[in-house]
Length: 183
Image (cartoon, rainbow, N blue to C red; front, side):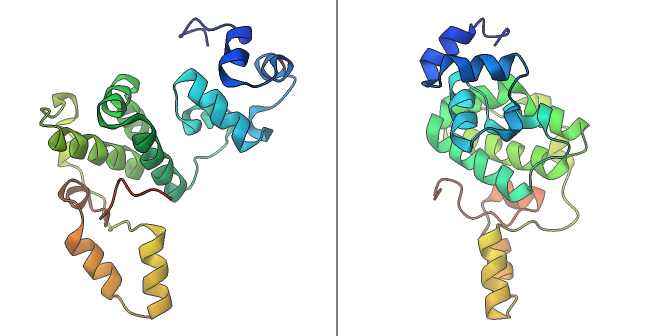
């Protein structure tokens, strides 16, 4: 709130969350980690940050990669390509995650940034050239693909996902075939 110069009153008005709730959260009388998903979502949207980054300070460990992946995709759909790209580069979560040794999160977000850049004919951000040489040791698949493979008892869904992955994701060893279709 300080970075964006937003008062408790303004945040309450913008988000539709009662002033007393926002005030209690800001003054430590209510724990953000115990708030409803809707409250956290509204606060994140009102502050122009991801839910994960808002909750990061009150979580002892990071969220599951699958949840992170869904949040990134949802944010892309909410904002659209160019605003998402601007936000991702401005917040520099790619470097932050990398320094925390959260390699899947860092490389996944970099893959999304590179993919959106390619689709919109925007040159790649040179700041991440060193990270572009990195690759996960094992392929990371979306939960849906893993479920289909487990249910069928066949590795074919995994092989197919790896072969047909979007090039930017394949580069970092993600079996990601779809970025925009969010349920």
